[in-house]
Image 1 (cartoon, one colour):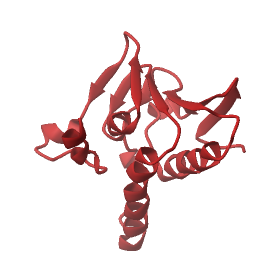
Image 2: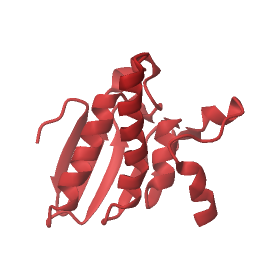
Image 3: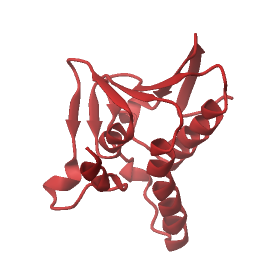
Image 4: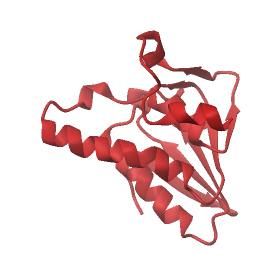
Length: 150
């Protein structure tokens, strides 16, 4: 399937999902979130795929949520929260290994995804951060509970 915000390639049993909004440092908007979840659904039932690698295009893995796309409409906010809640559950419940290939900045939602993946491999250009904690907030997207599983 063709996507707008991600690229999915399959080679020798390995699926590579590349977050593909390099001009925004691969910040996650709702379209990317939904495409990422759809790709996971498709790859999970693909018998030829044994492992999934997630990386980012350009100089970032993922700079977090794209706050320029946040909605003010309460109905849209609720709908977005349902997808935000589904995201960590879907990644954690994925039946094949997911490897995060960190090629640059991983912040906010991007760093949360890394906690949910089975394995992380970081380049020497990787920089991982949780900006919410510097504001006195807990890590969003449900990942705070993962600390007890480590």
